Amino acid sequence: MSERRSDPAWTVVLAGVAAALHVGKLPPALPVLREALELSLVQAGFLLSLVQLAGMGLGLAVGLAGESLGLKRCMATGLVLLSAASLAGGFAQDATALLVLRALEGFGFLLAVTPGPSLIRRVAAPGELDAKLGWWGACMPLGTATALLAGPWLLPRLGWSGWWWLLAAPSLAMAALLWLALPADARSAAPGRGAWSARLRRTLAAPGPWLLGASFAMYAGQWLAVVGFLPTVFAQAQVGAQLAGALTALVAAVNIGGNIAAGRLLRRGTAPRKLLWTGFSAMALGAMLAFLPALDAGPAVRTGAVLLFSLVGGLVPATLFALCVRLAPGSDTVATTVGWMQQCSAVGQFALPPLVGWVARLAGGWQWTWALTGLCCVAGALLAWRMTATRG
Image (cartoon, rainbow, N blue to C red; front, top):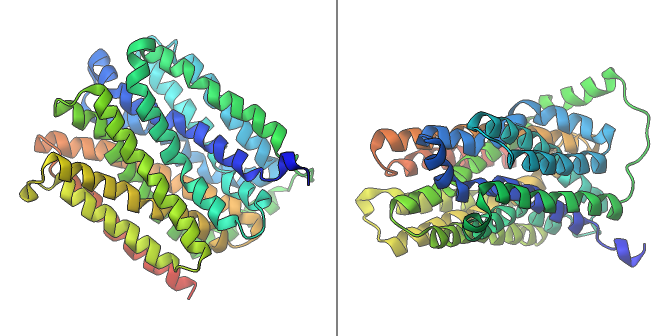
């Protein structure tokens, strides 16, 4: 192999980061949009989670079709669609147009991220699969943290429209780089309906994809709810926008460490169940310390608690992606299994932020957030036990 293509897995990881920027670009703009559009907390929660709408209905379909239509082609198309929707979003004149384009971004995001683990599985060097999948799990927090950190500095200078236009560039650039750096998709005859339905039946008949999907929903829904609302929580506490953005970006960024650590620990033989239980336990403890009023934690403790929530919680997604490659019913169903995981994850990310916002409105504050995230953690721990018991 030439030196130029010695490790194309990194190109896939960077493409995932470029896609994740579009998820992270909204939270720093949310206080501005709430004021400009007079959004309630529930409406803000739906705007935050609307990017997951496509994944809720189409994740399985995209995963099913990805292997046949071409994984590289699917990912590049998603990145281009993200760029186009972000460019158009900057010209939106009302909330309805912005919401529609946000949903279109969700479809582009789905196309971009669903093929990722399968592409990495194809191009990763021998012995590097778990480590590279750990980095793939870090794509979301890395892209989100970058947008959260840059947003408060650039929004006052560019406005939210300029912010939308600016973030169209990285995804378009990565689409071009991906197309040049990765080997061409294999040319094969398009499968008939029987082959597609057989692959679908095999995926949904196996317990692994269901357990993976439900676990990912429990993790991703609560992570997006907590991190997505942090700028609003900080703003209500009279924290300056730039400091709030930096703190929220730090919370998102430390999640990267958990993902990378999970990949290395898995490569060294650490049991997946231990990593999942550790991650969910830390998320439950962190949310309790941060939001439970009876503990009367000061600002430093609360910040540290949310950092714990995100850092150790990062063990969960990388472990789930590694298990996805192992628990898929066959090598030809990895993309389909990832698509099902994305679909379940999207349901969690669509439902949890509005639910957290609704509970916060009823309670007059964020003091019951820990109870919702705690329930998610208990469910995630039980699912982790079940899926790892299946493997013995």
